[in-house]
Length: 110
Length: 263
Image (tube, rainbow over all chains, first blue to last red; front, side, top):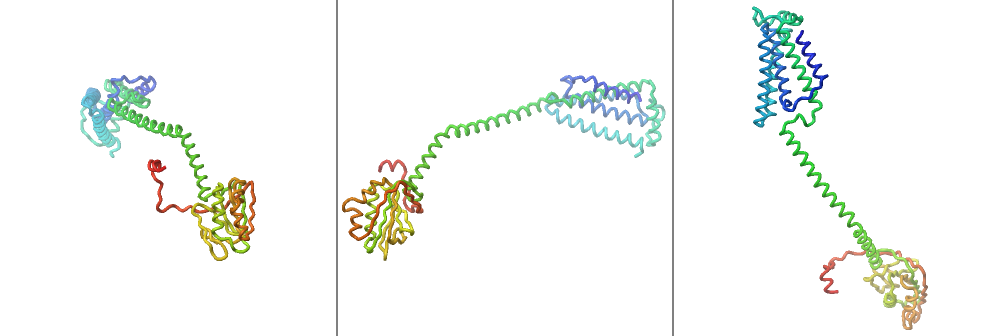
């Protein structure tokens, strides 16, 4: 419950504060958001599995974001930034979908 | 937030899952709940910021390679449009710059066509001139007399001539006109004319009348042959009969340089 409230608070803050994204962060922010989304879905699944651990959640959240950013950075340096970004988004999307499927099984057994 | 606790079984029982969700939804200030809330807040904040930045992102959010590609596209398009504009300007300059000369040449060509059309008999003509009526009473006026009359008129500066039977067919007289004696009349360019003949001639009226009236001239010959000839000077003579100009089968206009040598 507190997590949902935090999510809403973050969204509201982002909408009302209207911060400008710093230039160095612009290529990484979208990938980081997708990676964090994957971590959140993984955490929700772990919660329903009864194996949720806040330490694991924090590590996976930060780790996902960092790895995604590093991959994008590496891709930019290698000149395949856009392709690698697409690849990362696809992989994370697949993980999000599988996590969502597990959550659905838990809640609806379907 | 429910402690993972001892039950680590991965059951698919929905009631178990719902129970855990319900327990997680009950607000308790455990460390896990607070940490999850903080990270979710970060996620929501970042997502909202990214969505907003994406909405008003023009070129700022693009990569260097994309920017280079867009720049290439734009500059290529600009070059193409510039070339097109140059072409159009050239065309416009040609059209506007040459317009006066072209118009003058066109007017001159039209004037030449009018003059040549009158000479060749392809255009109707009008102007001052004379009418010569010949009533051949005894049938003694033949092609030779009419030909003499034509020659005399031409010598006197006739510019357009038509020969006709009064109230009958009319023939435009041109350079190639031929006159042949036939029974009861004269055939002019294949059209049979009978007396009384009428010449309509455009030229200086007094000169033409004088040319016909010289001693031993056309009128003298006609009176010798008992034909009644009347010459009437008119301020305006209208010649309506036309000829179809046949395209030459063999003759071609000579190139200008050869023409100059011969001329």
